[in-house]
Length: 156
Image (tube, rainbow, N blue to C red; front, side, top):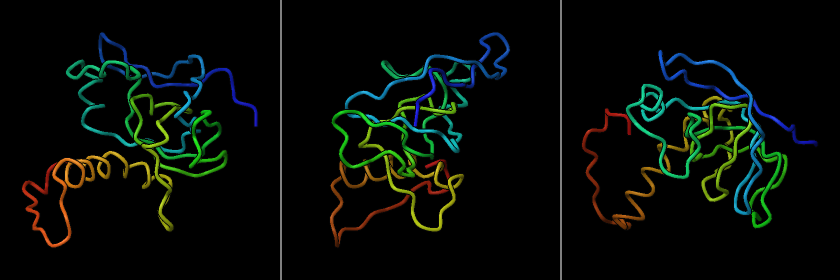
């Protein structure tokens, strides 16, 4: 498969916050990244806030909206061993998901669970990685311990 030279992205007009399609150079995956042909992208609160100038993209992140996607791996970086071209995944991106192609760290990619559509899979990564990181990596929750879910009706 030949990778296109350009990709289409959703651009934000800074004056009226309207959205339009524009073209830019295709990103190449870094050593630890995968290049994804995007099938679907999630819409998250930071995307909406960034669109209206209320939440800048973090340093080093793509200024293109979109934090989570699903799609097909079409290229991999030199240090990626878990994923291969043709794999169907969902991923947490460092911005750039509102595009027809995007890159994501290989460590922030997940296989799409059986029976889950590409559209539904695009909504998994942000929530899953946020909860997993906070509950199991930061708080180190272990079997047999209790966990209080407070504010479960909010975004995450």
